[in-house]
Length: 270
Image (cartoon, rainbow, N blue to C red; front, side, top):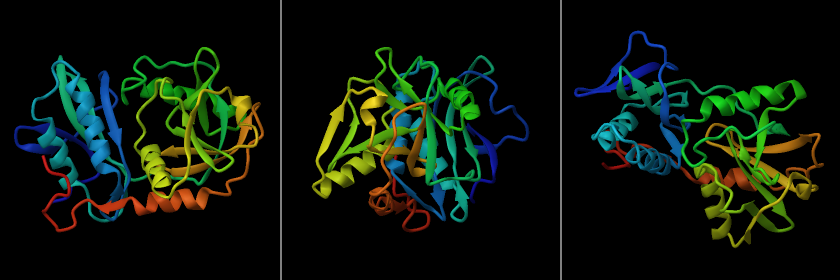
């Protein structure tokens, strides 16, 4: 039976709905989200691996995490547009695995960006611990007309969005921030880069300040929105138009898979 909308806790008997609980109470250690539309999603196996890899580094995490993640995937609704989120939170002096089954919020194909006022990240390689601080960055730039905040490091180099990864085009080359710039390993960006390589698109890495992106087509990538084109950078460089966006969205569409090609037969094993 598909899990109903709301919060669910992992127990010895599987996922069980929680009648009432503050979903934001307790320290958040790890989180991962992906979009599921009528039982189809992209990169779910990568989200699964990223979540499990982060859990493995946390002392006191449950030992049956693989079973919990696979059971969560099996419990997701097969119909509708959903944005589920798996979490490990501090609860009652210990830790608890939780699943939030949420309708997908409004999405967009374009976004105005602004440079974040600071970099609040404490664990830049792990999705979860810094999510509240990153959300605060987005709120901070909203009065300036921006929907996403771009984090730059101490020397001023472009790293990532608060809730997104960044790629840009320099001529015919698709560019990502340099590997030395610590950031969340984005599933959506990885899918785009792999598809681009398969089509023979040159891939490069750069450590650049915002002004170096003047005239570049800039993509803002996330599991929720997919590919958004940055149409303007508040108090930043003038950006190129989204001439290649349709190509990038086609790459992401080609990565969509049925979670369960045969009902009851998981695509992802334990």
